[in-house]
Length: 367
Image (tube, rainbow, N blue to C red; front, side, top):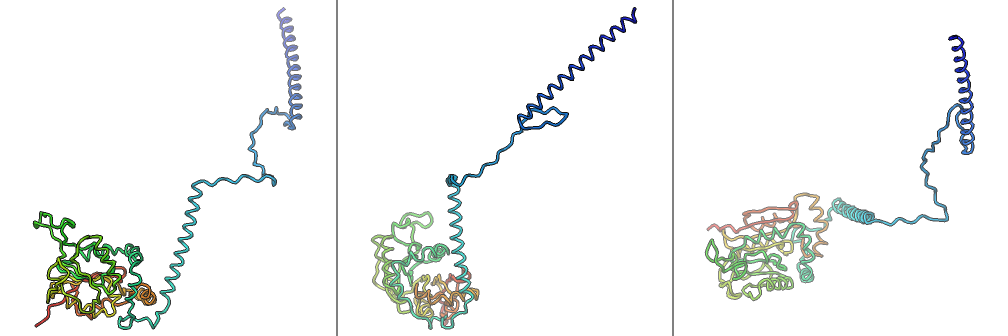
C-alpha cells in the first residue's frame, strides 16, 4: 500500500514540474519577443541572450555653429577689461619713451666729444643775459628737476649755517630766502622769551642780495616782500659779484650807511659759478669781502663729475644747455676753487660728483 502511494505521489510531482517548466519557457519567450519589438521601435538591437536595460545615457550636446545669417551679440566689456587695456596702453607708451630716452642717451655717450666745446670759462661765451628773458618762468622750469635731485634739502642745510652779516651773490629768484634764520621780530618766535638764552634771536643780523640780472633780482624782491611785509632793511644790489660790492651796513635795520672796512660773516652762492663770466675772479673778490679765518663762503654748485663718459655727455650738450638756461654745466669746480686761493674747510659731492657743496674760508695772511 505504501509503495503504491509513493508511486502516485511521485507521478503527481513530476506532472507539476513539467507543467511549471512549460509555463516558464512560454513566459520567457513572450518577454523576449516583447523586448525585441520595443527595441526595434527605438532603433536599438538587443544583444542575443541578454535582456536589454531600459537606460538612456545623458549625452552633452555640442554647441551648434551659428548660421551665417545671424551674427552673435558682441560681449560688453567689463571694468576689469577696460583697466587692463589702459594699463597695456600705458605700458606701451612708457616703454616707447624709455627706449627713445635710452637710445638718445647712448648716442650722446658714444658720440665723440666735439673739439670746439670749451671747458675753461675763459673760452666760453657769456650767456648770463639769458636770465633776463627767462626770469618769469625760471622757477617753474627747474622746480621738478631740483625736487627729483633733492636740492631743496641741500639748499636748506647750506643756508642754515649762514649767520651774522650775510651776503648772497647770484641770488637769482631768491630760492634760498625761505631757509634763512631771519632776525625779524615776530617771525618764527623772534623777540619772544626763550628758555635757552632769554630772548630768541635769529642768526642773520643783516642781509645783502646781489645779482647781475635785474629781472631775477626783482622776482627775489617780490618773494621777500610777500614773506615779510613791511621789512625794508634788506639791501638789493644789481651788480657783478666779480666786481666791487658794498660792505655790510652799519645798522642792520637800515639799507644805507656802509660799515667802512667791514667784512661779511657769511657769503652764500648757489649755482652761480656756472654762469659767471670769470668764476675764479668772482671767488677772489668774495675772499676780499669775507672776514679772514672766521668768515665762511658757502657754495652749492654743479659741474664736471667723476666719470669720463658722464663728462662726455656734459661736454656734448654744454653749448645747447648754456644757450637755453644761461649756464655752462661742464666747468671744473675743483680747479676753479684751487685757482681762487681759498681754503676748503669742508665739502661733499652728490650725483656722480656733478653737485658740489663747499665751505671755504680766507686763510689769515702771513705778516
